[in-house]
Amino acid sequence: LALLALLLSSCQREPLELYYDGRADLQLTYDWQSRFGEYPDGMTLMMARNGDSITYYDVSNQVDRTAMRMQSGTYLLTVMNRTFGEYGTMRFYNRTSHNDIFAVANTYHITAETAWDNGHSYMEEPERLGVATDTISVSTVIDSLVFYDYREHRYGDTIHQERHLVVQPMTTKLNIRVKVRGISYMRSVEGYIAGMADGCYLNQRWRRSEVGSIKLYHWTRDDSAATRGDDDETTEENVGWITTQVETFGLPHGRELLRWRTPESNYLQLHFTLIDGRTVDFGYNVGRQIRYHGDDGELETFDKTDIALQLVLEIDAPFYDDDEVPNLPYSQPEGSGLFDAEVAPWGDDVEVEVPM
Image 1 (cartoon, helix red, strand yellow):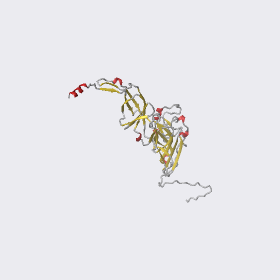
Image 2 (cartoon, rainbow, N blue to C red):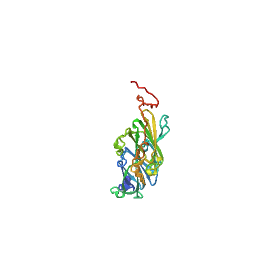
Image 3 (tube, rainbow, N blue to C red):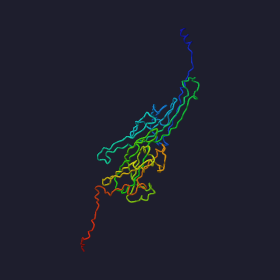
Image 4 (tube, rainbow, N blue to C red):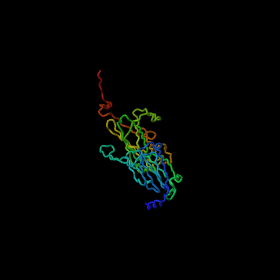
């Protein structure tokens, strides 16, 4: 007991200490609505530190803000809605490179021998993809751990950073409107648009230069004169319009502006089925007609932020004359019992007796 008492009396009690590790507090907040216009269920945060290699991935259902502590260094941040695996219409490559990570649309092939487009390959319409990027530098506060009494406050030694990230849309919509003569003879219509970008770079924001075709399914009739108030022909007999809207990555990089394209840069194919079952096709080189909203053909520069603008394509005046727009041949419904009568011309030397 005497020995134990001697040992206990020789122990020196030290005050409780905490340590500061030199990390910075980072608060990230996200704006999904102002540009992207959609509030996601989840997101993926990626970071590359002191270089291009992405080494940090965080998947979260908390899409309003992120709080973390950062070591000193330069960070390249990428935020996108969803996770890689949740996209069914596209796939992602170079996932470990901040600069080179990109998305590419999945493709499918038509193999039915009876299909009008048998042998064609199409890109899937991409799901909406939103991306925000930022570069954050965290300076070195201390080079080693610093211990201090727990009753002291070291808040002044901590770097606090707040960054607000605006998520940008990486896909856009293409609106197509086609004037059709003989529209009452139409049962249905399909088609495709070729020459569209097959993907995009998440952080460069540019579309890829590689192209593909997108099938156009969902056409609707639009005979409202209000859609083209300056057209005097809106009341012309048996003339109307068909419209469709498709999600796309946009035009390929280097062909965004009208002045950078030729007519052959994009191609529109229309496949009409008439009410009697016959089919008729029309094709148009539309590289000089399709354009981003606001491009009048005179623009000389194209900004990365403009890739989210909607695209417009119209097969109508002033680009096409009446004999150039789709003109459907006369048709009657199958099994209707209707027929066309042909009257032979009178002969010059034929005598016809008319009974009295």
